[in-house]
Length: 477
Ligand SMILES: Cc1ncc(COP(=O)(O)O)c(C=O)c1O
Image 1 (cartoon, rainbow, N blue to C red):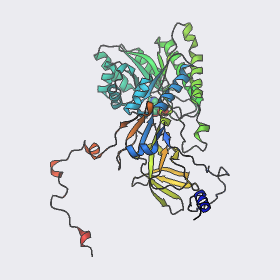
Image 2 (image 1 turned 180 degrees about the vertical axis):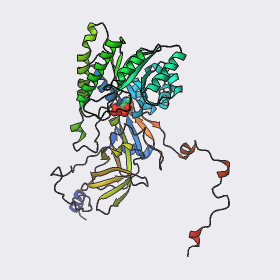
Image 3 (image 1 turned 90 degrees about the horizontal axis):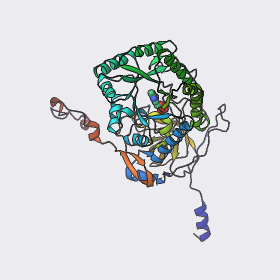
Image 4 (image 1 turned 30 degrees about the horizontal axis):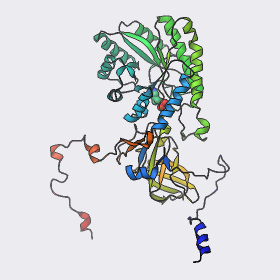
């Protein structure tokens, strides 16, 4: 081969298997789905190939830098618009200890909803008086601990109220409590199973009942109107209803409300399956949410200052908007297949066991190298021997080789808490920290982790006590 021929060989593109893509008419976008597939090679400067080599695939990666900057931006959006703002980190969104402590270091309290979460916050070093305690299921023992440690208890129902009254009486204490409210903002389906209803007068009756108690003081109001709420006006209405209720209580009972807790629910930059437009176009900015909340709160509380009463502290329990895009899941291709309808399918090493939220989100799935070849509609399956194990039902991707990695984006909310130890072990979770330090924040599971809580009755210790069953297969002729 002469030199010229060698040159032209080098310039040749890789051969790619031809594909036929049917054109379907009548779809929303006449140009079809985007054909441009980008790629990402590192996370906060750490090469993905190196991460996989060292920590294996699949792998969750949290960016400490992104987590802190998300919190700081949200905090700034509210504190620059309202003078008294407090965040409680919603443990159920992601209670990996390192994630919680990054947010505590940024100044967030803990917002917990169970005995387990309460214990977790305490074990991380959060004092009881920095815990907001929500939830419909607080057992007596944990309520007693919470009262003793001056946690901020958000009462869900009357039985909890009566239990608290008894506990406070036994402790000879006057306990400040908060009630959870439910109501219709006009924008979201009311979560009426939690707390006391405003419109029916139930919440006001409860306020009177607390007022008549010698051991309880009503000092806070809480509500959480939903999750992934895309309409900031829902929050203006929420604040309006809560302020109206606060004014009425204060006027009628003389109590002073110290804080209004509006829960969480701001949407993150993630793609809900039911929404056609990309998240960048439908998800409001955090500043829009902040404006809706703070403008209304400022307007409705300014007369308090004239009365010599401080405006209430605004408490936020923002979860997904803080953590979702601060974590990714790296997963690798295990096998390629063709489905009977012609679609390309890929078996990945991570499935809905790890990425529970893929049931309702189309998580972005980005290659980790330039992929030549024409993007084609592809189904991404997980490793589970279960039909429901689908990571993406339809995503445009060029052909992938076995071992190629994809990065699933915005996975920080509700996955490290709702994942399942089901069929597969759960993998390592690492955090990329300052100065490119990578720390394992949750070790990959092994057999012993999964079985350590089991015990075997004496009579069941041997699988085949009467000798192995007949090996019919070896006798088959
Ligand atoms: C009481 C309460 N607070 C806060 C949150 C966090 O919500 P999000 O992650 O949507 O911000 C939730 C989630 O459902 C909740 O129930």
